[in-house]
Image (cartoon, rainbow, N blue to C red; front, side):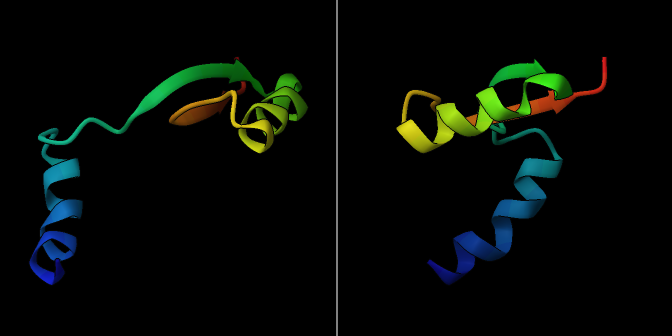
Length: 51
């Protein structure tokens, strides 16, 4: 496991591991993003954007 955790950041940076981003929401909907994560209905990563 130690070798994997040492290699994982390099693999992510090289694009060999997908980041798991499943949804992008505007910053104004940050409370919705929190709700999705807290209730388990949001799977993966949620990105908040300024646009």
